[in-house]
Image 1 (cartoon, rainbow, N blue to C red):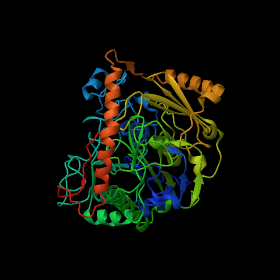
Image 2: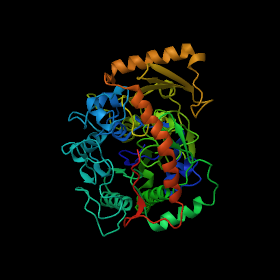
Image 3: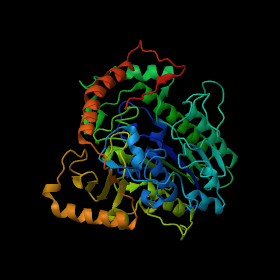
Image 4: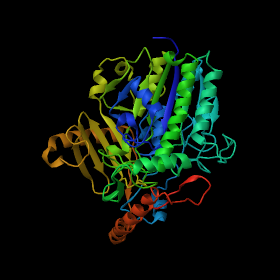
Length: 505
């Protein structure tokens, strides 16, 4: 193993497991990101630590599950009694949560920097206000990371970002981030470096260029659309097909930016000594927000407790070290990157930092590791998601996945091998397994000091029922019309950029 390899970590925002060609999308195009999968290892069961962004991002940086660092919802979400302001009439009041990384958290960037690495961050941060920015947690250079979770001003200059002044009018934000990362690599090619490219893409608003929109509009019309683009699943409509040309254009722009970085590594002769990782922070947006993609055959999407909300693209490449074109079906998580980076750099995990993740270096080297094969994975989301998710906690062990719901103290049990779409709750037929997993989940929640939502004494079931009825019978038709418009050659947006903000909720 070469000492002090370079590390490039690429994180997409709201990109789902089914959104890339490498994982089966037949509509979106991602040749550069697919290169990482083809030239390295693709994990078929890679997970985010949460179904929403801020908790997942904080878990990547710290190696901890969300209850340990305290950020259990996206920063800015309402909690406690303030939740009532949204008028959703829910049974529970979401738990309180931390609104930024705590000062005593030791990120992998801090450890690497102390070991002589030059550290760089570009793009979305969303892990706290000023004072809890990338430069406060080990990154020497910060290009674009601040408090916001979506790109203020949009994806084309002039955007609004105090850490990344916009270039000429119309400049593409993802391309700019790719160029900034490429420049950092060139300037530090003779020294060990860690570059964290954290895209705002493909988070809403939906925006792309006219050329990209036209390309994917024509591609979409070549395929038959289902009779209904959306179905209603419990609390919100859920998209059933990938045919949004604006969203496809956004993926293509991000992919082009990734290509800029990969090409730079090749041109400088750094590819063989650089670990490149690619993943996303949560599932694709199939409901709520922009309703932009479909995670089928997985159920749900961003913000939801099912596989579509937490399973991610998960690719790792290092030519000559990681065998090209390999697949791994061992479940892994975003919490595993921290100890893996330490292993690759030959550094110990700091003893004062609790790390829930485990190094996946043995898997990358083609070895089997019993601890990784047999461990439990956990999720805790004591909130209501904007995308229809329920306050819940989840455990996965082997092929089994148990979801505990806080509204009614109910459990669901799925066998992911036989039922990856989580359509058949088998808790009634596997009571011993359900009891075992629930006990292990409860033990973990206690040990992690997880905060639990509370019942709202003002809960009105009639108001909640009326609210959900309106969502189904008013929102569904509106979405069908709106998304069909994106495929209409006569459709024209009102703004200078070619796209649309979707604000229906």
